[in-house]
Length: 478
Ligand code: TYD
Ligand code: MG
Image 1: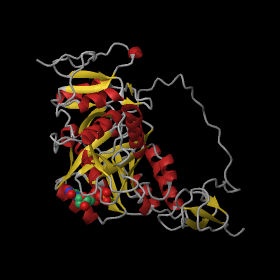
Image 2: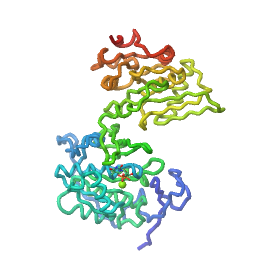
Image 3: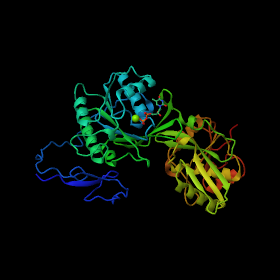
Image 4: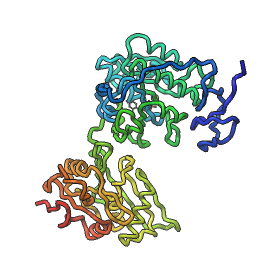
């Protein structure tokens, strides 16, 4: 038999090369190439003696009148919503997050919630001893839950154990980087090992109809450590994030074959585990100082849920040759664009100012609809005029200075009205959008339609934004 060939596999992207290099040619990562046995990297060929193909039955797409996959709900609403309404049996989910963010805590709570519903739940820890997991459960107040525990890292043993007895409803593997299989000849944590282990667990999930959650560590630059390939193999990828030093935790869907990916779940880390935050807008606005210039409330959407957050801007005379532009929680390129539009179409001179923009509460906003709120905060700080405390803003700014309509305007307005806001500045609804149904009445909210960025600037410069007579349904509140 020929001696095993060696291949050099990048631990960052999984690319295979024939010789060792300091830098991966495919992804550009330095020092990421590790020697592994050939046949384990991407594009590996089947061994020559492998069995012949078996003929299997094909089924018709049209004849599948099967019901939607059943879902196993945990009862933790913030988690269930992000995964699309509960775990799908037979699916594999990857949960990524920085060390210490609370992945093990979240999963311990999910396991406990499911076990209360008399479902078989197994928690395999490759990082902590069984006693450490017990201590955490004690702290969470779920020490009495019927969760089956083990501290194991050999995937073959794990799959053998899981296949024994009744099929579990949920299996947690904490973490995939600690798992290894004797079938692969590389060290645990390498691409081949992680992929081999993930493959074995995915196979188990499909055959047993159990939902499996893999915990994945995240590198400094925010990627799930090691193999991106695992992200492609699993059915759903969630990321658990938080702001350094804060108790707020956000659970985001990154990929989901069985549900939406734009939902977020909001939690707060307390002394007794993660608490759900059912009304995050109230939390994000809780520490607001509405009397200071430079703050504007953005009526945003995160998936199907409206979310109000405060944009804070500081425009200050610069002592530097090149003024500073700093953004936290928003896209720096979008800030540059909004500043350029303010200069070009509203006549503002911003060249000699340092500009800081931040989204309060540690949230990251990705929607273009935030342009108008960012612009309002910037103009407010520049002019020193405080915006009305009961005002919200949303709308996308075009390069021409026009304010473009955005989706789900009514959901945004409703949330604002619910939280006690009385005015909203938003784009003119597009004529082909059809009749705006369910818009809050003028009693609840005075809606001002803003067509151009110069209107916004003129209004703020003139004092608090008033309701415009030609606004969509503007009529001042009695
Ligand atoms: P953990 O779930 O172990 O994080 P991960 O698995 O993502 O590495 O959570 C660790 C942090 O959470 C730790 O710093 C302590 C804190 N924590 C609480 O604040 N309250 C709690 O009830 C628990 C269990 C943990
Ligand atoms: Mg952990």
